[in-house]
Every structure is written in C-alpha cells, then in structure tokens.
Amino acid sequence: TQLLEQSPQFLSIQEGENLTVYCNSSSVFSSLQWYRQEPGEGPVLLVTVVTGGEVKKLKRLTFQFGDARKDSSLHITAAQPGDTGLYLCAGAGGGATNKLIFGTGTLLAVQP
Amino acid sequence: SQTIHQWPATLVQPVGSPLSLECTVEGTSNPNLYWYRQAAGRGLQLLFYSVGIGQISSEVPQNLSASRPQDRQFILSSKKLLLSDSGFYLCAWSVAEDTEAFFGQGTRLTVV
Image (cartoon, rainbow over all chains, first blue to last red):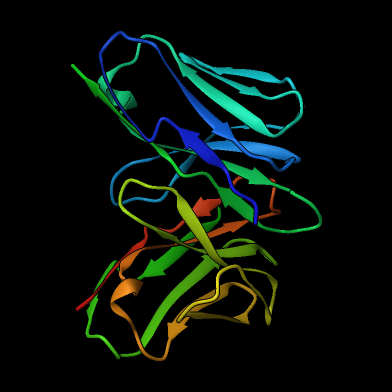
C-alpha cells in the first residue's frame, strides 16, 4: 500500500512566521501535487512537481520535489491568516496505476 | 468548461439503511473518476477509482461499493450503512492520474 505521511499534522503560528510542511513516502511517484482545502469544500490544486529536485515558487510558497521523487516539502514565507487551511500532498503514477494517493494532511492555522 | 456535481451535500441516515451518493462530470470525456473519504482535518482516503465505464478498482475492503454506469457518472453505494461509514465523502475527476484532480463539494454523511 502506498502511503504519504505529512508532518507536522497540526501547526499553529503567528502571522509573519515561516513554516515548512513535509510529505514523505517509501514509494516513488512520477509526479507530486500540493492542494489546499477550506472547511466544507474540496481540495484545490496549488502546484504539481514532476522532476526530481524540482523547485517551484508560487508567491510566498516554495515547493520542492525530492531527488528520488519519494518526498516533497512546502515552505511558506511570512505566513498570513489567509494561508490558513488544510494542506495535502498527493502522489501519482506509483507504478502502472491510475490512482492519485493523498497524504495525511497538515492543518495550518495562522493567527493575526 | 468542465464541472463536477456531487449530491447530496449532507445526509443523515440510520444504521442499516442503504446509501447512494451520485457524482456527475460535465464538459469532458472518459475522465478518471475517484471517490475519497476524509476524516475531519485529515487526508483523503482513496476508496474507489475508475478509468472507464464499468471499470472499478477498490482500494479498501469495506461496506461500500461503486459503479460507473455512464462515462461521466460515478455512484457510491452501500446496502447497509454502519456507524463507521460516517464521514466526508468527496468525488473527483482528472484527465489522468498525474494531472490536476477537480473535486465536488463533498457529502457530509452521518450515520446514526
């Protein structure tokens, strides 16, 4: 069974602080996606990384795909209350499959 | 443009009653379709995925089943609900497993 473990599970920080969320697996994925989810809604895609070692930036968010394509990280600089939400990584293409496997989630709360 | 509809939004059902959640996609053909279940503040557990009509892959043995009677229709069912079936159910579609997944609004199921 493919598993994607995220850490930390919960994170409460003050506005302006930096944070990093980790997504780890023993499986190799052809690509990895990051989503953010608001309460009562479905997740919305933030970014997709496909190359080992790839780094993508989305304003204050920096995403990195591990060299071995088994792990990824999300770094947020100068967090704002609007960043509050559930962050989910999702791995695709682990073998000859058509399934998208989601991580365990990181619940982020940014206090003003 | 593509849209995904999932209903109902909330559902309260007694133990032992049947279940039918429906999901339809518009504006695309032959999508990958997924059913996920989510515990509060946690990641998404993949329940079923489908790459075509009548093709269903089950990820977790359980009290639920899925069907795809039409290309853009995905149904989650149960003959007899258990208390442990309570949760937030999300339907999603994608062009392929490594492309963006688009989610419905979710169904909050409470089994009493």
